[in-house]
Structure formats: structure tokens, C-alpha cells
Picture 1: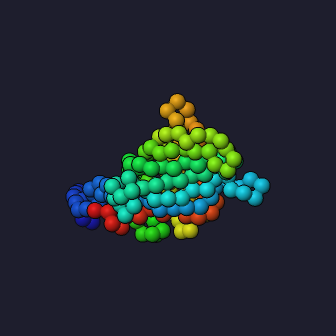
Picture 2: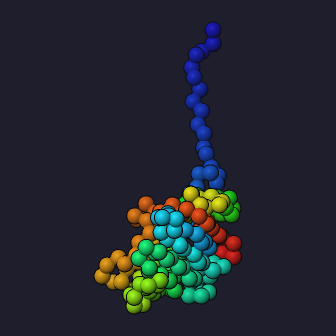
Picture 3: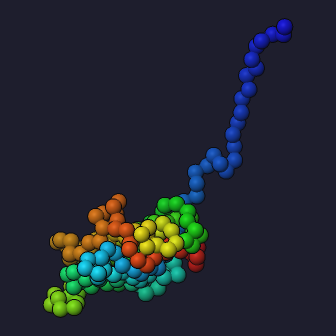
Length: 177
């Protein structure tokens, strides 16, 4: 019988699979729909665009609206800054990210019988595009502050956003460089 010595074999792994994945690129958001229902009416309606065509300069970074139907409040984000694009790849549409975090300033107004005056506000938001179509799957968080307190909030936190009931949130990477 031959010598039973086991040979030592060394492998060197190299190539793209050993490097860190590329960082998520820039993105932009379009969407609209409703969240939850009470007595047949939506609790919230939302819609707008963040960084239209992936441009921070177009329309001041976008325009994002949320209406709280119960309180008669209309939030309008008028100057928006995208903080990050992250998450996983999706096919709704095909992108390499599914989360957009943003913040900015805007106004909050009373509507539908609410006599509250229009005030300047700041906000932070997060949208998660989980699939096409988004109802029952996509998620939205928005926290609006008047500088001393939260005056409107959708979802519990950025880590625990509200699931949208109808509509869609769509994160895009087209037009981004």
C-alpha cells in the first residue's frame, strides 16, 4: 500500500466576488395611494415625486403630499433632499435599490373644515418599494414637525413604516448618473 499522506492543497480566491458590492446609486420616487380605512374612507392619501428624473434641482427636489382625512390636515413637502437609496434589487421596475430616505421643508394646512392656519414645517420620510403593484406591500413613513413637536406622522418610525392599502410607491434609477 502506498504512503497514506494527505497532500496539502492551497487555494487563492480572487475576482469580483471577493470585493464589496457596489454602493447603491442615486434614485428617485413616484407614488400615490391611500393608507388604512375608517368607516369606508382612507385615513391618509399620499402622492407626489421625490427628485423628479433623479434631479435634486427639478421642482426644488420634488413635491410630496399627504392628507390626514381624520384631522383635516394637508402636508406638502416643497423642498426635498434625498439622504440615501438602499435596500435590495426589485423588478418593480428593475432597480438595484428599493428604499429611499429623504427630508426637507414644506407647509401644513388645515383643509375640509379644519381652520388651522398654514404653517412652515420640516419632515423626514422613507418609502419602500417592495413589489408591483404596491397595495398591501409597499411602505411609507413620514414625520412632520413644526420645530417643537410632531404635527403629522404616518407609520410608527422609519424602521416601522405604514403599509399602503392602495396605489403604488415606485423607486426609479433611470436618469440617474
